[in-house]
Length: 209
Image 1 (cartoon, helix red, strand yellow):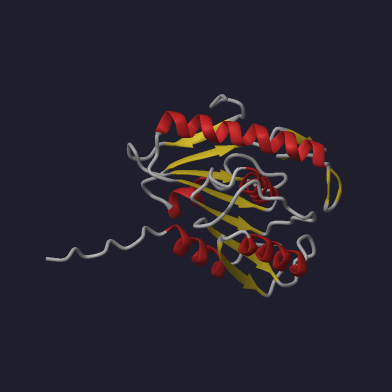
Image 2 (cartoon, rainbow, N blue to C red):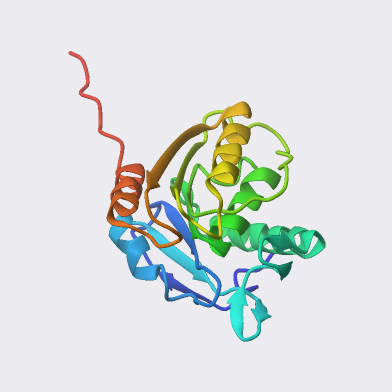
Protein backbone atom coordinates (compact mmCIF):
# COMPACT_ATOMS: atom_id res chain seq x y z
CA UNK A 1 0.00 0.00 0.00
CA UNK A 2 1.31 3.44 -0.94
CA UNK A 3 0.10 6.97 -0.33
CA UNK A 4 1.43 7.87 -3.76
CA UNK A 5 -0.32 5.20 -5.85
CA UNK A 6 -2.34 7.97 -7.50
CA UNK A 7 -1.50 11.52 -8.50
CA UNK A 8 -3.35 13.40 -5.79
CA UNK A 9 -3.70 16.54 -3.72
CA UNK A 10 -4.04 16.84 0.04
CA UNK A 11 -5.50 19.69 2.08
CA UNK A 12 -4.14 19.10 5.60
CA UNK A 13 -6.50 19.29 8.54
CA UNK A 14 -6.09 19.27 12.28
CA UNK A 15 -4.06 16.37 13.76
CA UNK A 16 -6.29 13.38 14.44
CA UNK A 17 -9.21 14.96 12.58
CA UNK A 18 -11.31 12.94 10.10
CA UNK A 19 -10.03 11.99 6.65
CA UNK A 20 -12.28 12.81 3.70
CA UNK A 21 -11.53 11.22 0.32
CA UNK A 22 -13.11 13.08 -2.62
CA UNK A 23 -13.42 11.31 -5.96
CA UNK A 24 -14.09 13.23 -9.18
CA UNK A 25 -16.34 12.50 -12.14
CA UNK A 26 -15.29 11.48 -15.67
CA UNK A 27 -13.24 14.16 -17.40
CA UNK A 28 -12.44 16.07 -14.23
CA UNK A 29 -9.38 15.73 -12.00
CA UNK A 30 -8.20 16.01 -8.41
CA UNK A 31 -9.24 19.68 -8.27
CA UNK A 32 -12.97 19.14 -8.93
CA UNK A 33 -14.15 18.40 -5.39
CA UNK A 34 -11.22 19.60 -3.29
CA UNK A 35 -12.78 22.94 -2.31
CA UNK A 36 -16.19 21.36 -1.81
CA UNK A 37 -14.65 18.82 0.54
CA UNK A 38 -13.07 21.61 2.57
CA UNK A 39 -16.42 23.42 2.78
CA UNK A 40 -18.14 20.26 4.00
CA UNK A 41 -15.51 19.34 6.61
CA UNK A 42 -13.41 22.42 7.50
CA UNK A 43 -11.16 20.67 10.02
CA UNK A 44 -10.68 17.40 8.11
CA UNK A 45 -7.75 16.35 5.97
CA UNK A 46 -9.02 16.20 2.38
CA UNK A 47 -7.42 13.70 -0.02
CA UNK A 48 -8.28 13.93 -3.72
CA UNK A 49 -6.79 11.38 -6.17
CA UNK A 50 -6.89 11.63 -9.97
CA UNK A 51 -8.26 8.66 -11.90
CA UNK A 52 -5.55 6.53 -13.49
CA UNK A 53 -7.55 5.54 -16.59
CA UNK A 54 -7.88 7.77 -19.67
CA UNK A 55 -10.99 7.59 -21.84
CA UNK A 56 -10.08 9.61 -24.94
CA UNK A 57 -8.16 11.94 -22.65
CA UNK A 58 -10.81 12.07 -19.92
CA UNK A 59 -9.58 10.78 -16.53
CA UNK A 60 -11.61 7.99 -14.95
CA UNK A 61 -11.09 5.51 -12.12
CA UNK A 62 -11.89 2.37 -14.15
CA UNK A 63 -12.55 1.38 -17.74
CA UNK A 64 -15.87 0.89 -19.49
CA UNK A 65 -16.79 -0.44 -22.91
CA UNK A 66 -19.82 1.82 -23.37
CA UNK A 67 -22.19 4.10 -21.47
CA UNK A 68 -23.21 2.14 -18.39
CA UNK A 69 -21.24 -0.96 -19.49
CA UNK A 70 -18.36 -1.52 -17.12
CA UNK A 71 -15.17 -3.52 -17.58
CA UNK A 72 -15.75 -5.55 -14.43
CA UNK A 73 -12.19 -6.89 -14.30
CA UNK A 74 -10.83 -3.37 -14.40
CA UNK A 75 -13.36 -2.24 -11.80
CA UNK A 76 -12.04 -4.98 -9.49
CA UNK A 77 -8.46 -3.83 -10.15
CA UNK A 78 -9.34 -0.21 -9.50
CA UNK A 79 -11.30 -1.02 -6.35
CA UNK A 80 -8.39 -2.94 -4.85
CA UNK A 81 -5.88 -0.24 -5.81
CA UNK A 82 -8.00 2.61 -4.44
CA UNK A 83 -8.74 0.73 -1.20
CA UNK A 84 -4.99 0.29 -0.73
CA UNK A 85 -4.47 4.01 -1.33
CA UNK A 86 -7.13 4.84 1.28
CA UNK A 87 -5.62 2.44 3.81
CA UNK A 88 -2.14 3.91 3.35
CA UNK A 89 -3.41 7.41 4.14
CA UNK A 90 -5.43 6.13 7.08
CA UNK A 91 -2.40 4.30 8.48
CA UNK A 92 -0.30 7.47 8.36
CA UNK A 93 -2.92 9.98 9.55
CA UNK A 94 -4.61 7.82 12.21
CA UNK A 95 -7.81 9.86 11.82
CA UNK A 96 -10.81 9.96 14.13
CA UNK A 97 -13.04 8.81 11.23
CA UNK A 98 -12.86 8.10 7.49
CA UNK A 99 -15.38 9.44 4.97
CA UNK A 100 -15.80 9.33 1.21
CA UNK A 101 -17.48 11.68 -1.27
CA UNK A 102 -17.78 10.83 -4.95
CA UNK A 103 -19.57 12.26 -7.96
CA UNK A 104 -20.58 10.14 -10.99
CA UNK A 105 -17.57 7.91 -11.82
CA UNK A 106 -16.09 8.86 -8.44
CA UNK A 107 -19.31 7.76 -6.74
CA UNK A 108 -19.10 4.44 -8.58
CA UNK A 109 -15.56 3.60 -7.43
CA UNK A 110 -16.50 4.73 -3.91
CA UNK A 111 -19.57 2.47 -3.93
CA UNK A 112 -17.44 -0.42 -5.18
CA UNK A 113 -15.07 0.07 -2.23
CA UNK A 114 -18.04 0.14 0.15
CA UNK A 115 -19.18 -3.22 -1.27
CA UNK A 116 -15.70 -4.77 -1.16
CA UNK A 117 -14.59 -3.45 2.24
CA UNK A 118 -17.60 -2.32 4.28
CA UNK A 119 -15.45 -1.33 7.26
CA UNK A 120 -13.23 1.05 5.29
CA UNK A 121 -15.47 4.14 5.52
CA UNK A 122 -17.53 5.39 8.45
CA UNK A 123 -19.77 7.21 5.99
CA UNK A 124 -20.00 7.83 2.24
CA UNK A 125 -21.84 10.27 -0.01
CA UNK A 126 -22.58 8.95 -3.50
CA UNK A 127 -23.63 11.74 -5.86
CA UNK A 128 -25.31 10.35 -9.00
CA UNK A 129 -23.91 6.82 -8.78
CA UNK A 130 -24.61 4.24 -11.49
CA UNK A 131 -24.34 0.64 -10.33
CA UNK A 132 -25.67 -1.47 -13.25
CA UNK A 133 -24.73 -4.75 -11.58
CA UNK A 134 -25.90 -6.58 -8.47
CA UNK A 135 -23.41 -5.71 -5.73
CA UNK A 136 -22.05 -8.37 -3.43
CA UNK A 137 -21.17 -6.82 -0.09
CA UNK A 138 -18.22 -8.59 1.51
CA UNK A 139 -19.49 -8.31 5.07
CA UNK A 140 -22.02 -6.10 6.80
CA UNK A 141 -22.83 -2.41 6.40
CA UNK A 142 -24.63 -2.26 9.75
CA UNK A 143 -24.04 1.13 11.34
CA UNK A 144 -22.56 2.70 8.19
CA UNK A 145 -24.11 5.99 7.01
CA UNK A 146 -24.62 6.49 3.28
CA UNK A 147 -26.12 9.44 1.42
CA UNK A 148 -27.20 8.99 -2.21
CA UNK A 149 -28.12 12.03 -4.31
CA UNK A 150 -29.80 11.66 -7.70
CA UNK A 151 -31.85 13.28 -10.45
CA UNK A 152 -35.26 11.90 -11.40
CA UNK A 153 -34.50 12.69 -15.07
CA UNK A 154 -30.85 11.68 -15.06
CA UNK A 155 -30.12 10.16 -18.52
CA UNK A 156 -26.90 8.57 -17.27
CA UNK A 157 -28.11 7.15 -13.95
CA UNK A 158 -31.72 5.93 -14.33
CA UNK A 159 -33.80 6.46 -11.17
CA UNK A 160 -34.80 2.79 -11.00
CA UNK A 161 -31.14 1.80 -10.62
CA UNK A 162 -30.69 4.42 -7.89
CA UNK A 163 -33.65 2.93 -6.04
CA UNK A 164 -32.26 -0.56 -6.54
CA UNK A 165 -28.91 0.51 -5.08
CA UNK A 166 -30.70 2.01 -2.09
CA UNK A 167 -32.53 -1.29 -1.54
CA UNK A 168 -29.30 -3.30 -1.72
CA UNK A 169 -27.59 -1.06 0.82
CA UNK A 170 -30.55 -1.06 3.20
CA UNK A 171 -30.81 -4.84 2.98
CA UNK A 172 -27.23 -5.06 4.17
CA UNK A 173 -27.89 -2.87 7.20
CA UNK A 174 -26.67 0.53 6.03
CA UNK A 175 -28.32 3.72 7.27
CA UNK A 176 -29.26 5.19 3.88
CA UNK A 177 -30.60 8.65 3.03
CA UNK A 178 -31.61 9.53 -0.55
CA UNK A 179 -31.87 13.11 -1.80
CA UNK A 180 -33.66 13.55 -5.15
CA UNK A 181 -34.11 16.50 -7.45
CA UNK A 182 -36.21 16.78 -10.61
CA UNK A 183 -33.30 17.37 -12.98
CA UNK A 184 -30.64 15.29 -14.65
CA UNK A 185 -26.98 14.49 -13.97
CA UNK A 186 -26.11 17.96 -12.67
CA UNK A 187 -25.58 18.69 -8.98
CA UNK A 188 -28.27 20.99 -7.58
CA UNK A 189 -28.41 23.09 -4.39
CA UNK A 190 -30.56 20.63 -2.41
CA UNK A 191 -27.91 17.94 -2.96
CA UNK A 192 -25.22 20.25 -1.63
CA UNK A 193 -27.35 21.01 1.44
CA UNK A 194 -27.96 17.29 1.99
CA UNK A 195 -24.20 16.71 1.88
CA UNK A 196 -23.67 19.54 4.38
CA UNK A 197 -26.12 17.91 6.76
CA UNK A 198 -24.53 14.51 6.24
CA UNK A 199 -21.02 15.72 7.07
CA UNK A 200 -21.98 18.11 9.87
CA UNK A 201 -20.50 17.13 13.25
CA UNK A 202 -22.85 15.18 15.48
CA UNK A 203 -24.19 17.35 18.32
CA UNK A 204 -22.49 16.76 21.62
CA UNK A 205 -24.94 15.47 24.22
CA UNK A 206 -25.05 17.36 27.49
CA UNK A 207 -23.64 15.38 30.37
CA UNK A 208 -25.72 14.56 33.42
CA UNK A 209 -25.01 15.70 36.96
